[in-house]
Image (cartoon, rainbow, N blue to C red; front, side):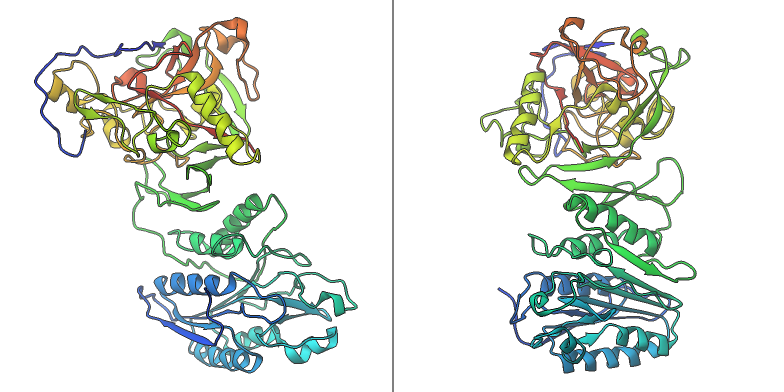
Length: 556
């Protein structure tokens, strides 16, 4: 067990030397608009896309379809599609554009049709509503709208290898009052051979236009499409999960598919990607699998709106908590090894930064160490006690209107998140020498600068704290769990708590159990033993130092 006190630096003896600086370490268009994009990727077969966004309806205008169409067109062009984007089309212009698209895809390859705007089902058929449509009763839909079946007919006639139809058109029927039928959304249509039809929500339901610049569905889709090595079916599965989460289950995207073979919007990369790409609200980011050449797994993210903190979804599961007697550098309080199961939870992708914490305590100063600043906006906040961390969580809950409950992670959740499915001493392997590839730890850098002894036999290039997410993520997409700064947990610390753990979601918070709180994770001063996922630390709630911070969990 590591004991934390102010000014105590475990694992090192500090020699005072003359300090030398160590560089960087220490309004919408309402007319018809046609946009052409030039492809930035050359695929192995022709890719053609027609993208239509209709917003400027006289009855029930929409805010996002134009933005959605432009975003989709831009991403598709980057993915190797020859893209035509049309905006605010009338019926005749829509039909002409669809016919021209049909001629283009007769050359073979992949065809993609995307529509954002109003869509209505009438008589069991789906109609896309042009700008300028005048519909007074249900029968007129057939004459004023554009039958979505005409797109499928063009695709079927072309007989190209693969076709994709994406309809973000399941919004509220603007003419519902004059309709005899009470049907909502679009009707289910069986996809012809070699075709995938994707709907923004399930048949008979309506979609959310979204509060932001893009509709919720398209906003998530354009992010997921850019994930390397993700099959098309998995792209839409991830979008479904993200949209369902963002709308609290009110909107569930749906697909009908008869595809044969695999299709990737973005081809698999040749090797694992060590660092992930940032996701937006409820986004999807690729995370490399450690220690192998397996394709990257993808994880869900959610961006908290007050501080901009990104949370990663950690799927529930079971694991062996603690360390075996054979594990080098283990402490007695890490046993016995026992199986623990935790429910899924959202965890901060990184430790809370100074910039984020100062939204709660504007005057907070994380200070410096030997001339190395610890107070940068993107560095992890330090010199915070357990009560400060818990107070920040409660403040954030209030700032988000009480819609989300934030807290410190339990000790079990923390170790589960650190291990990310591994059973080795370190989440990357049993090789301590690899620590500096994954974490900011006590290493050769401060040893050279300040004549420290001990530490890890590697060099991470940082004298003190690094900006969060400087180093690559673990298998769950989480950064800095075993380095940068130690992290407060919810639990009260006792040496023998593992003998008392329940199997499911254990947490030890009895006040009579003791005064110390659990601290987990390595830090920029940490030696090899403290970087292990099983290592446990403790400190009084008022403990503060330059290598102790925290990260948050968001409850479901």
